[in-house]
Length: 417
Picture 1 (cartoon, rainbow, N blue to C red):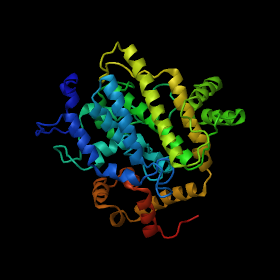
Picture 2 (cartoon, rainbow, N blue to C red):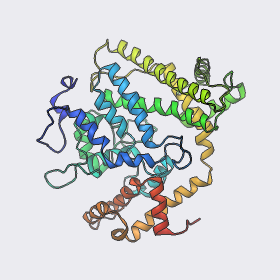
Picture 3 (cartoon, rainbow, N blue to C red):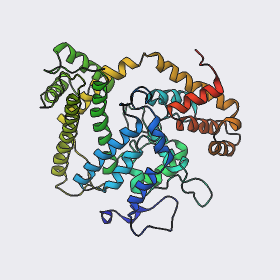
Picture 4 (cartoon, helix red, strand yellow):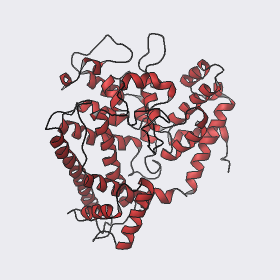
């Protein structure tokens, strides 16, 4: 498999001499990712709801493991190196802070004047700077020092802040300005185009969370599917929520048709009551959904690429429009029954207060309160206040949900309202 890739694809940003005779470069990448501390911390970070709320729900780590399994299947079907895609999938959420997207929005407010905060850009920063493994000859950190092909596969949005494709409405970006050297080295002047492996990672993420968020919602009784599918009124509300969150690229009719196809599947979990048999049936349904999406994409992509291996920039992953509509509708169901109602929950405001209070606490006494690895970076920033604040943001982003609360109790006392 590795011989389908160029020598430049296996290069590392910081040169290394030793190589394992028994493992490929991409297998070594996967090993480095599996053993890194940032991956372990995801086990205590919010995916949709907080990890302390339920033993069943998914965390960032369990979600990433599921994304990796889907991504590996896509890679095997489409001819890419499975280790590249699996590593990218495992890494795709490393940069997310405590409290999920709520924490991400809070840190973006904090960092608005010095480059913002974006979970995907933070992932690149973790992989190329913050995670301890290798160093450049000048003594600067090189993070995990992954190969070019693997690092490029982790970059979901191949542009820096405010420099995305003309007309893009997304506020997402894949690299901060001060991480541009690593970004440019990995992406090699390929513009806004993503390698096939990054496309597989992105699709695997969409498939995994569209399917598994529904499973979590059903088990937690946030969403109670009916035997015959959605009532007309319920379907109208769900489609409205879907378009409000994800836009109108898919019409009401397309989303309604997608809903009918999904509820007509043999194992649709209508009337779920939580028995062991019901839970097994729900697992069969989510498994069928994943298989349905992977099969549709595999068939369409092979047809488009004449069956040739999909490696780096040799072609694109093809997702049929009906399949995309089904994925978007499932995401909309999770929005309607879980995410939208959560927006006004009191705990949401409490989480943001914790983030803002911690920024104040670290700014007040950085050398006493930052972890040692971040103290060194803070000192190296010298008198550059923006660079110092970026270090504080890095520190907070590294925390888990629970450690954010512990540190808040230690340095801030009672939560301010």
